Image 1 (cartoon, helix red, strand yellow):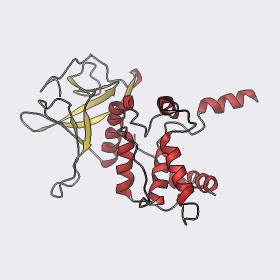
Image 2 (spheres, helix red, strand yellow):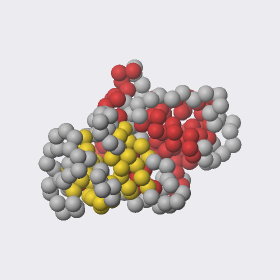
Image 3 (cartoon, one colour):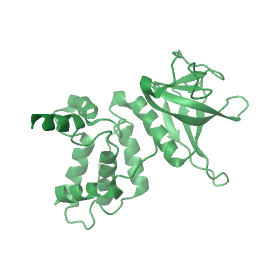
Image 4 (tube, rainbow, N blue to C red):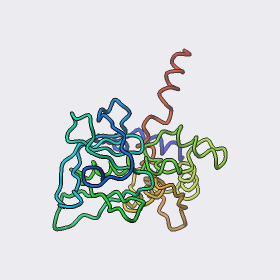
Length: 252
């Protein structure tokens, strides 16, 4: 059955691999509030990235801190005064296709809403690091519009989606489960076999950008199952939140 297959899949170690954890100076866009780079002060993500200068086009290593709807950068992680910031409201963030002649360059860009401003190019030190940054920034940009749901708490997602009607689970979960129930209960290797990687990524990006893509008759059930597993794997806490578990223990 679907619940048993899903439960067994999510219990397996392979289902939950460990994950690693503009601008002022060149160009200034909008107000940049002074801020400390400390992760203990409300930062959503922090780490080293290389930023391309707008004039010289050379790369400079900076310590970046994502806080609220601003991406700050510092000379190093000990500095308390940012060299600049990138206001993220209205921006887009895109991974850039790797150049075969320059392997190992993990590039992504932040594209401002205003046409008069150039895109900001950033370079991560690994694919996983770039993926984490893109997801974190995309969540900041699209969460107010119902996007950024991968890595967002269940409570926040369900709270936002209440405006579309009462439901007990996020729309993505309902959509995936309904599709699997309709087309995948007799499928061999459900939740064990991988779906189409590129399509899973495309669907993830669509949901993260606030879209609600529909699955059609040509959609592979293993792709939908992989999308559901990815969503559950990236939740910041278990499906049954820690707070509910603690309350259950206390009641005993």
